[in-house]
Length: 300
Image (cartoon, rainbow, N blue to C red; front, side):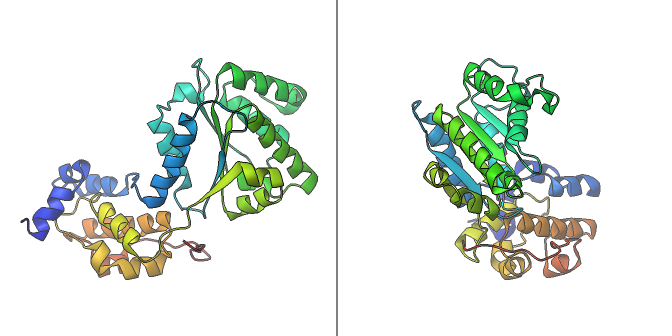
């Protein structure tokens, strides 16, 4: 049976293990590197998206609303899904003949013409200004069919909220029209997005919510912390899940992005100050800055 240090080194990710004897700056870079850690809610969301895409073509396919506060991991899940399905810059630029997934980032005050424009640009269409707005609908619809698009993922859907109700209704009709031609619609946003969906009865039946409300102080958070610890080039175990879970939860309310930011800061402080693991002192002295109003979380 391995002792705790041996177990820690055996579980460490290859990039972290390889950096143990590197310079401080390289170890800091490894500590700050992007991380995707699979957890129950991410696994559930990815499973629903992949299953929907694998179904035979149908009228009004099931759609989803990925809902969560800022830093809850929504973008990471969408990016992972896109990569898992072979996403690449050529696909997002509309170069390939078959583009199964489009990711469309909505801008502030996301009116129907602006959404159409964003969809057009995500397909590489040469539409550069709203002077083409009158032709956008037909142009976008034709292009979606030509490229055999199966799913459209609209991020920042909460940008629809500031619109007058009449303009929001036009946006809802656009989503229904996209769904009616057999394309899976996925909207991503904060809790405001759920309020928008509840305004339109048709969307309630078409967009099923997948919530990412953060971790409770339970086994799921402990497992996440155990995996997170393996990303840092520190030679001794920190026992984040055993010794520091209460502190981490208190500072972050279990919001995934805040948990990672807090532990990143503590790990970097430990590295820069010659510590072999993350201690309570590292959490106290790391450069983590919480959100201005403090993290807030819905019910898990």
